[in-house]
Structures are given as structure tokens and as C-alpha cells.
Amino acid sequence: MNSSELIALITAIAALTNIGAIAWQAWKKTKPEIRKIEAEGESELSDANKATAEASQINSNLLMNRIEELKVAIDAEKEMRKQDRIYFNRRIRELDRELHDYRNWAAQLAKQVIELKGTPSPFVLSLDTDKGMSSIKDEK
Image (cartoon, rainbow, N blue to C red; front, side):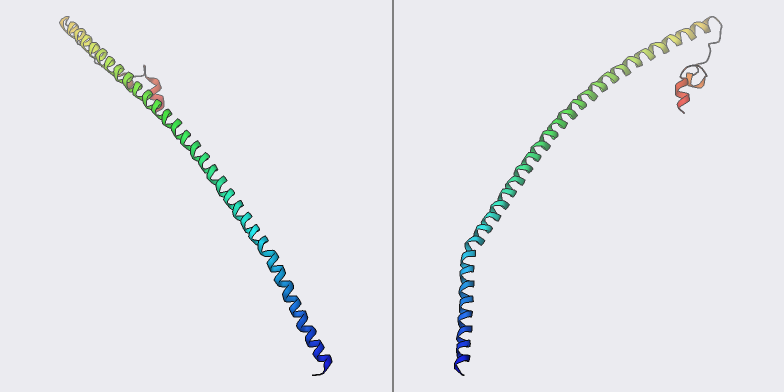
């Protein structure tokens, strides 16, 4: 090896050493920044998770409030239906008593007609005639 080759070799080794030193220094400088960026990323992720948890809690509270409102509305509706049933059962009993009274009255009238030597007219449902309850016929 002659001296120019030796100088070129030493220069190449020095350049490689210099490149290695620069790379080492760059890595040492970026290592704290990488940690800082990772910490910021974890902090942002933690903040995002916290915000998501808070939003979920708010949604959960809103849903629970709505469920309670609906329960109250359902209970009120049930109470109204109960009152309706009570009213209609009372009306049915009243109408049954009224029907019983009309039947007794009709029986007495038929007895009076027979005692007077007449023939009582037969009972005909209003649905079987053209009179009355026409709205029910129209629905058929």
C-alpha cells in the first residue's frame, strides 16, 4: 500500500467515525424528544379517554332520566286505564240493571196485552230493521 492509499483509507475511517459520532449525537438528542412526544401522545390519549368517559356518563344520565320520565308516563297511563275500566264496569252494571228493568216492564206489558185478549208484538232487534243503528250497518 502506498502512502496515498493509506491516507485515503485513514480519511475514509475518519469520515465513517465522524458519521457514527454525528448519528450517535443525533440519536442522543432525539431520544428525549421521542419520550416527550410519546408522553404527549399518551396524555392526549388519556384526555380523549377521559372525555369519552364523561360523554358516556352524560349519555347514561340522559338515558336514565328519559327512562324515569317514561316510567312515570306509563304509570300515569296505567292509572288512567284503571280508572277507565272502573268507569266502564260501573256503566255496564248500570246498563245491565236498566236492561233488566226494561225486560220486566216489557214482560208486564205483554202480560197486560194477553189479559186483554190481544197478541203482543214480537221483539225484533234494531240491527235486523232499517231503523236505528244504521251506522253499524254502514261499517259492514
